[in-house]
Length: 114
Image: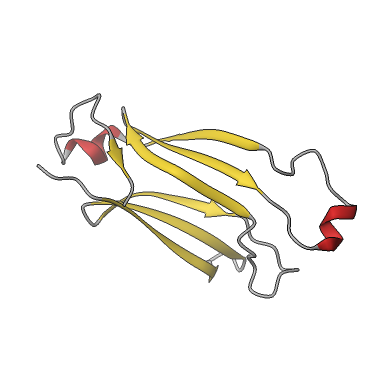
């Protein structure tokens, strides 16, 4: 069986608690398997400025793996750099086994994002 892992980003979504958030949604064969909050800042024009780069996303052993890197831009940021600038973080998020069992995925099966 062919598996298709995709991602959808909702920018500046107004949530029920009255706050605005950016949300990442991950789908496996068009079924929602994970929702994540993405950095949101009211100082930016749209609430986001694409400064957090998320790449190398894949699903393995019931976990979603990501590589995240924060990159400030503009001359203002060059003056006020902090320790987090340019730092690469390798993160993983668990996916409920009940959600993935409906797909009959073997435990060590690697699925890369499209």
